[in-house]
Amino acid sequence: MKKFSFSLSLSLCIVGLLLVGCKNELEITYQMSGDWYADYAAVDTLEDIDYSRIVQAYHFNGNGTGYWYKFMLPDDSEEPIDMLGGSFSYSTDDDGSFVILLDKETNGTERTRRLTYADGALTGSDADGDYTLRHATDSEMLWCRYWNETLNGGSNLVGLWLALEDYRDNTALRMQWAADDKMVVGSINANNQSTMLSVPVVSMADMTFIMNSYVSSLAQDRPVWAATGVDDVSVSYKDNNDASTFFPLPPSLTLQCTVPATYTTSMYGGDRQIINVPMVGYSATRGDTLQLQNLCAAVKVCLSNATESAVVLDEVVVSSDYYRLNGQIELPDFDGQIANIQPQTTTTKAQRTVSLTFAKEAKALFTIPNGGETRTVFVPVLPTGADNFTVEVRCHPVQAEGVADTTYSYSDKMTLPAMERNTTQSMEVTLRTENRE
Image (cartoon, rainbow, N blue to C red; front, side):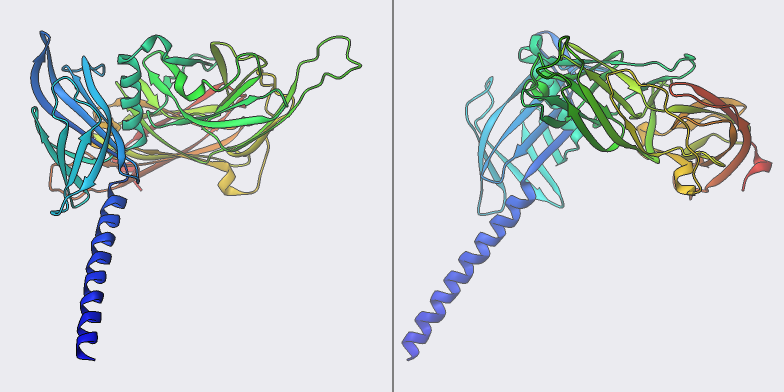
């Protein structure tokens, strides 16, 4: 009996250790799965071109495989001079580190490398020095994919150019997508069925497009439509041709979506507002370019800082006394040209309010210097009739390091004329010390 008990105990211990080992490996593999990213300084020269920055990214699948990128970038440039990369397999070592085996040697790089996981980060080292990888954002991985496709046969990079409608009065700043914004793109197949894809948009200076790898499955000779900056997108499609039709009739598409009540925004270069405004587009035949039209009007909020210090914007809220500024809209028989969207009144306060929240990252803070300096932001709203509008501003002064933040609030109210789709109206607000709330 004792011998049997000892053998059974020993067996159970071995099984237990194996289970613990398997569990730990599974836990670590789970922690590794997904995208990892590092952006760090590294000064060197490649083929007589200096670079000062390296971006590395790894994608780990749950089955022990993955792929990686390494980009070398010069000073003040978003275009790399060269890259390394490829696929790999990986396994865990006894010490808990990860052993990466590249599928092939690339430009003299060692095929085997090691990454160590601790406190939510992966650390590694190569000929350019040490680096630390953290979980990547969609924006960071989109840039890696864009750079990869640019450096490896960029002639087929663009799948669909996007033409953006400018506000009719030409007073709006250039509005630009953030790098992690996405667009819903749909196509109608030969069976009159709609296929929808959620794809990232590349927005660089005056170029806005979707990469070919994301839309290559859409047929060139079939209808295509798109929606961005909206929620709850749905489409119904009808082909109006039948056996009794003597002349071709255009198809009819009904698009429903929800205009949001809250937007995140920041500024780029002082003259571009980074915001995903509600826009839609449609073409009966997919070509190289798709025209997008604004669903909304916009309140142009001009903020003048007359306080004793520079301030950082946290939130701007615009509300109407009677008119709906957000919510569901429907575009029946949408053919790419939006008819007037009729203003609607509502007693629901949440539908009469739209807010902008501003980025918290240091490099994206929206700062207004003091001394009467003025900055402008645009708040998308559904078309309205003439009404009283209230604007509320929440901000905090630029503080010295280690000093607790103090939040200030300001508000103002004024009457604005009716706003049609794709037009703007201005509200001027002066931030004064005596007007703080």
